[in-house]
Image 1 (cartoon, rainbow, N blue to C red):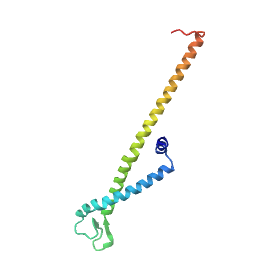
Image 2 (cartoon, rainbow, N blue to C red; image 1 turned 45 degrees about the vertical axis):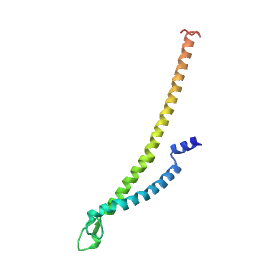
Image 3 (cartoon, one colour; image 1 turned 180 degrees about the vertical axis):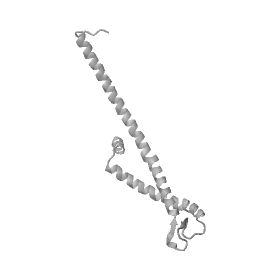
Image 4 (cartoon, rainbow, N blue to C red; image 1 turned 90 degrees about the horizontal axis):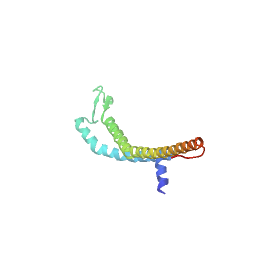
Length: 135
């Protein structure tokens, strides 16, 4: 049962991608709540008395020319936090596990190659000595 679960985690396919999307969506909701509840009030400190939040007017006589910096910074912080969480919780452990698995497979393959070479050398030695082994 655990071997099957381990194989599932280490193989790259559509199911894994679907799991990543679901986890990413869940992380997005958590990070958005943190940013809206913690970061946005801090950003509002820099916005002053402006009713639109943190930003500036391109033309102060036209309210429609307001460039809102708060939502841009919020989206950037959301993206960075979500990417960092997904990287450190999913990508980094999975890549370490894949690396360990690959090195174990390479070690196993190199042992087989070494044994094959020894066998071949023993065959060559027995042919050249007429079937007699001298140690």
